[in-house]
Image 1 (spheres, rainbow, N blue to C red):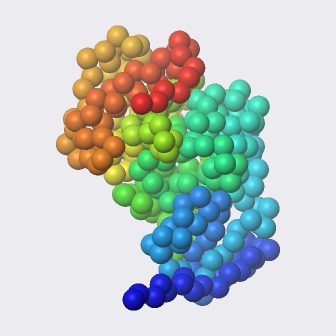
Image 2: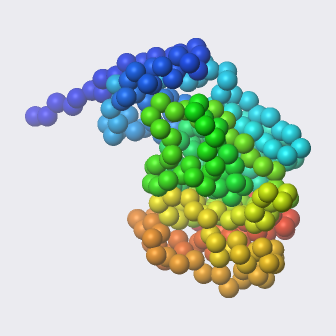
Length: 282
């Protein structure tokens, strides 16, 4: 007869950002709790055993959305549903509001946060594609990290222990589009693509980010170079993603995911140029 061992941890709900940082620094095995959409199921499955949960819900510094002429800034504790419903985001970066509106299911969108999502860096998450596709900046308690340097591998980021995401700053593109081909049961991304034509001399002209297909979001240089010359569906009609290094599991093989990257790219481009405005699913 076996006896299950209960997860044993303490709980704290700091009222200031400084208190939260101090708790995380003092407890190396502590975990910050944002929306809990990944952490809570992980705890239930006994896949994590933190000594302390640091609940960030009482920190007003991490909430809110600001829209200017050049940028959209989203606080780390902003729920997906808030971003999806924000009129300013929809006007400035329609593809970003569109992406947020299709994350997983309504219950997840009402609890999940952008900071929690990108800090977890699940390969099947939506937000990493937007950050990399738009060349966003991640503002933390210690520094500013470009999106290209933030996501480092499977469930891995550049965040140091006790370093928290404060906000994400997105430059406003000329136009952008996003398509994910999702698992119909979970809503997670099997393969997706975010395409943006950027504004201003300091920005690269075209950015293309692929999510879901590989262990980590990545930029697709072939598509970027092609679309920088001709931003049209005809230019990428013959594109084929190399399956080498892509994910292969019970949901999709690497070859199938490679095929889906091409489908997602063409549909994301359609959205960017105004001929499509819908998510696609398997």
